[in-house]
Image (cartoon, rainbow, N blue to C red; front, side, top):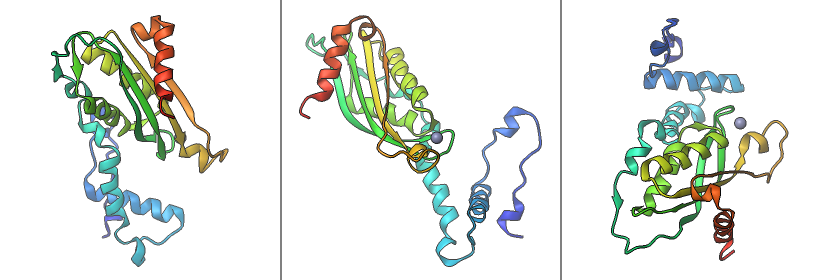
Length: 209
Ligand SMILES: [Zn+2]
């Protein structure tokens, strides 16, 4: 029997049963099915190791399910010598996958916050972005989740987030439009109430360009 024959998903209607993670063998067998669906022969030399590679890639692409983004932000620094102005991370590269087609979303994120006595190590902001990006996503959902998590965990006076990304489900299939980028934003706290602060956020985005 090939691994392909062994795939048998539980018909149990219990939700927890249907969410059970399949074994690595089951996942690799599913990739073989997709290779056949594409019209190729999974047993030919070039494809023999592909299911194992794809499954390992999935462990990287979707590593965010195993991590807790709020925990990531619990270690903060309070000695900031009275610094109370905007802290911004610009041009953070973003790799995600769209939940509708499971193809890449590639872009950049710009994150800012107005500290309230506490700051967080700058790499942590990029890590929070990655935890949400490394799941199946829509750009809109990811934008809200990242900004709201920073707001809830760090409790700054406000958070600003802009994501600018290309969706391969639009450039390589469907309408096949390349070089289209989608922009989503989320502003909380003072960024929501103060248009001048938002304007400074946009100005900072353009600095040095
Ligand atoms: Zn899509």
